Amino acid sequence: MKRSVNIWNGIDKISIVLFLLLVALGWINIYAAVFNEDHPGLLDFSQRYGKQFIWIIASLILAVFIVIIDNRFYFFFSWFIYGTCMLLLVLVVIFGKEINGARSWFEFGGISLQPSELAKFGTALALASYLNTRRQDLTRLSAMIPASAIILFPAFLIMLQPDTGSAIVYFSLFIVLFREGMSPYIFVSGLLMIVLFFLTLLTNILYLTIASIIIAVILVWLTTRKWKLVLFGTGIFLLIAGTIYLLDHYIIKSIGNELVIFISLILSGAAYAFYIYNKRAASVLIIYIFLLGSIIFVNAFDYAFNNILPKHQKDRVNTLLGFKTDLHGTGYNVNQSIISIGSGGFAGKGFLQGTQTKFKFVPKQSSDFIFCTVGEEWGFMGSGIVIGIYLFLLLRLVTLAERQRSVFARIYGYCVASIFFTHIFLNIGMAIGLIPVIGIPLPFLSYGGSSLWGFTILLFIFLRLDASRTEYLV
Image: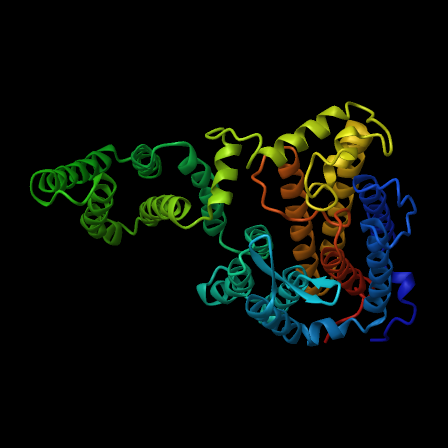
């Protein structure tokens, strides 16, 4: 097929306008967040807004470079790019500079580079390439396991730094797998894990385990409509649990109630195995597996939260949930952020008029908490406009992804939309106190060269692929 000569005719102008608008808004708000009366010039390179201007110009050059490259380059070199990104993630753990307890940065002179931001587009390319190969069927474990490994490997390397916030973003790519045919059971399992995550923090583990068993029993009855079977199974479980409990209480004295219940479920499941096999009761088996998996997850998470998670991150979660009040410690950032955004009212205090911003009450206000500046100086109306631009961009990306003839381009487009959505949701949620502080940037608004470059590369590779959507990659 004849290849397009004029890329400009095919590239999506709306997405470019939204990109430029967000970058401009970011630069203006960074200027407001770190404004220094002794250095009022927007192009003062000794200040963050001057440095951000350099990053913006570099990003625009990078965007042009990405667009003029043949679109087949991203397809044929996707695995090489992914491998290079993984190598950088390994090297940064060994040779990187430690900042705020995380070894996440390479430093070259006065320039810092964060590989985790760049690895996102590499992971998206590799995932798109893998799923494009022979049209992988994600209902099969043989396809699902490698796809999950592509996502989880960089997340694991980033956790070693450790950088929990950046690692979480990679899990958003499971949304893409669901779009491409992943079993709904796996997707529901993920949602269930999120629900159990919060319930584990909010309730007693023993009560949560008992409640899970009761729900499972009700589901078995609803799917089979055989109350005798349900009563028989419940009776077996209670008999086994009672026997093990008495043995533990009077003889062993070391198992514990949670383990007693878990062992009883395993033995009860063995008693149910004949019925499941004989009647081919797949629904009962699925409920049973979900129940065991839920109990394992709850206890594993409870152990990890109390014994493995760093103290400062655990304090942030407890502060968010109201278990701990520390307005001058772990809760300070969020509290000041909420005050800043709330003080903006409907129309805001005006450009450079934010008192919370001016007196530096919110740490990292030019990066992780840039939305505070938007809220204080531009108010509810300005915040709504910024969120509206983001929503427009996300909807535009989904629209572009759906019109792709190439499976590779469609999957990559959904990867970009998923990553952007997760960053926007978590960052703004963090700023308004709905989510624990995990330290991730707001796309195109937050200060930082690595994040701006990473988001620019993510977006413009997709725009380049979309510009040649009428052509076949191979």
